[in-house]
Length: 117
Image (cartoon, rainbow, N blue to C red; front, side):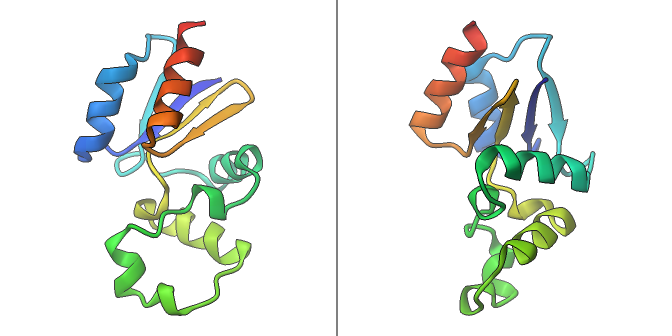
């Protein structure tokens, strides 16, 4: 499977998509218009090692919901990501059995290398 989970309205996601130039064999899923399934979130977390690894604390809802003051469990991270797409650290790319999470230079460069193969 080759799939990129992204947010169409996110300028960073758009910039990254232009940079990595995914081919026609890569499926793009706008997580706002096409909600992630629990199975998709579970698969991402399995590849990433935990739900916390695909969770972002940069979402405005993280602060507004008072989550910074709570001790979240893996179960909490899973529930939050499934219920609210803004909690997914974007973009998340799944290429075969590898996952590339977020917008760090290292993640983007590794994704570009993988997509060229």
